Amino acid sequence: MKRTVELGFLLALALILSYVESLIPFSFGIPGIKLGLPNLIVLLLLYEGTWKEALLVNGLRIILSGFLFSNLYTILYALSGAVFSFAGMYVGRRTKRFSMVGVSVLGGVLHNVGQLLVAMAVVETLAVAYYAPYLIAAGTVTGTLIGLTGREILPYLQRVEREGE
Image (cartoon, rainbow, N blue to C red; front, side, top):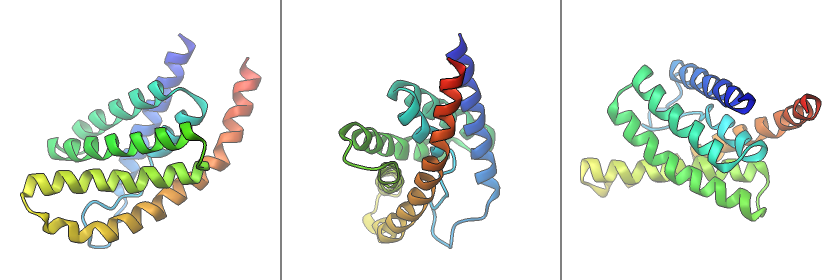
């Protein structure tokens, strides 16, 4: 029961971060660029929870924030990005070949790759691939920022967890 409450709190926090992110004008004229603030929760769950918990919170966050703050197309793009992102982050974490920052960068870049692939399918043209270098660069920068933030927060979470036992 305690873990359910903790996951509910993390889901609520991820929704708040989604809302805050929706208020920040951060596009630089290129569609699809976001800070990825809610991915901080997913990243932390990959390190302090289980992959199933991370996947559950991420999926619920995307669906709920989509219905609360945007529309069905946004959910489609977010889910496609999340599938690629989560797969990369999971593999990066599981192989232990990447630092937390590296895992986060993988997530940021692959999220954009997943969204580009859906965009190509929706608009039925490869022309949107023109945005790939910009989105990959943006995913690298934002993934680095989220990873650095996660790296700073993780020791506090671990200490709180130890004290709660």
